[in-house]
Amino acid sequence: MTKNKIIIPLSLALFFFACKTTKPTVSTSVQQIDKVISMQIKSLKAINLEEDLTLADEIMLTYALTAVDENNKVTQVANGSFGVESMKKGQIIPTEKFKPLSLVLPQKGKILASVILTEIEDYQKAQNTVKKINEFGGIGKIPALFISLGEYETPLAVVFASLQAAGIGLKAAEHFDKDDLLGQNTFDLSLTNLSKTQTKYPVELKFEGENLKNKFHYELSYELIIR
Image (cartoon, rainbow, N blue to C red; front, side):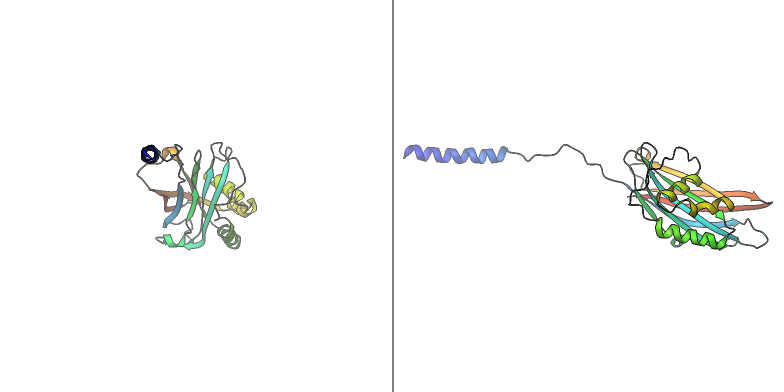
């Protein structure tokens, strides 16, 4: 009887001691959180026109987010287009007229934000292109074709590659070669050049030039947002 009275409390003591000293297993692996990049056109302003005779330019703005891996291969795309808009001198197109785009930033790659502004000659063909891009090119979450960007040196070429990767095809972009290019630009973001505190990257562009002695001037503003 005396032995039983001693053994039982000792067993309970050992049990509670074991419970207190046992720690839950903690994983030492750090999970990388994906960064989503969103592109929103803020405004398009017509400061001076290319067409002085008609007092209006037929404008089309095509823009794209293109994700590429460490080997410069396209992995995802999102495309948007605006127009065809008859713009007069001093006219401003506000942000709500432009469809926003979003893509996940590759861990070892980068995202290219590209814009091209053109003055349209073939109105009907351009309208069909805008419609096709906005219907099929805005889906950025499906894997794109593995297209190398090594040979694409201009923003115009990057947009072409993005349209092709989206499955729209090069035929949708053929008319760009026949129209007047008013401006083009590409801005890139990667994890290495992201600020730890900055979540918005405003981009202000001026497209100026001369065509047939007519000087044109457009200002485009857009913003890249990190989430």
